[in-house]
Image (cartoon, rainbow, N blue to C red; front, side):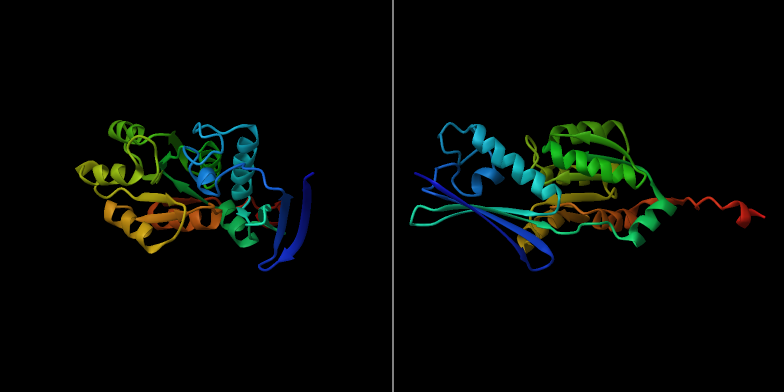
Length: 239
């Protein structure tokens, strides 16, 4: 027989932590490697996830979209635990929303991201901030699209399929047309070696997953022109 235990607690930084333990453990995935890189680590040795593994992958992506964290732990006594944490209250600050309501960024942005959820989230945030957005899912697409259209900013994941994001940035910097265009790298961690690799490739900024609107707004504010939209005056104010 198997036993499943669910534990819900409030942890630090106003996070809600949920831990699911199962005994005996079932060989679902070989740790987080399979979830971070779906091309390896699946339990059936076929480099393809089964239904349960697909469910875990979707849960991980959805939790990250909501600014949470996901993990897998296994113990020597046969117990396996899946845990995730979510903010108990996640709201965009009123000051940020006030800035957004009064200001829009001008410019066309090319976003390159192979993960559909992240791509849609970033596209929605950029459009909320006033940008026009084109999307690409492979490194080669970035090079071809930027060769026919001049963008005001390029945002790309460094782990793009085909030509990776770092190589794309390096090639763009060799072109006179793209020598000064702002390039923003999407990365999974803020480790110094990752950031240094982005800088060496010619990236100006880094966006660390999970993506946050306030950080994106800060980066856009450094490089893009803005147009201000004043709130409509009431009838009494107009008189």
